[in-house]
Image (cartoon, rainbow, N blue to C red; front, side):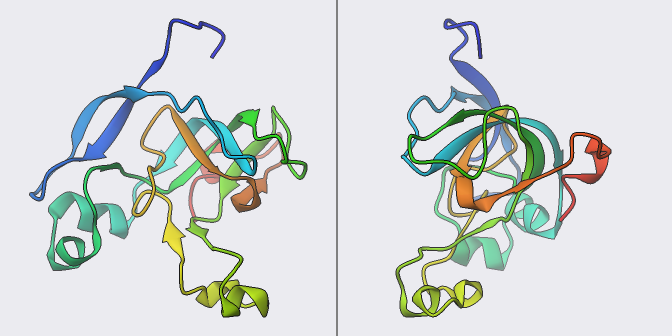
Length: 156
């Protein structure tokens, strides 16, 4: 991201309510919420959810709000952090918990975020990782060893 004139990135978007995906360009996220990080995506994986999105089957037709950047299984390097982020740093190699919880509903407040009533999924409810960069909450980052095989880090 050193080149200030390189503000677009290649992305894979679910744009239309039909079979298929579109490869296009979108702006690299420039603004972060105070608790977010920007990650340069190194590797991604394709899973069954991505196939549902691609084929636009009955599940996808009921679930998706178009358009959005697809993909939720990835690893990459943190290149920018929000002002209140302290648990990860620029340069960390991370993968992600793909479920973003609200932290405010009764379940989250009881420590039961796994049943958060406001859960959002990266690459389904938010722009995902089939892109050169992805913006996610810092709390969703898993810090990986820099010695780990990068091909193993994007599989959930």
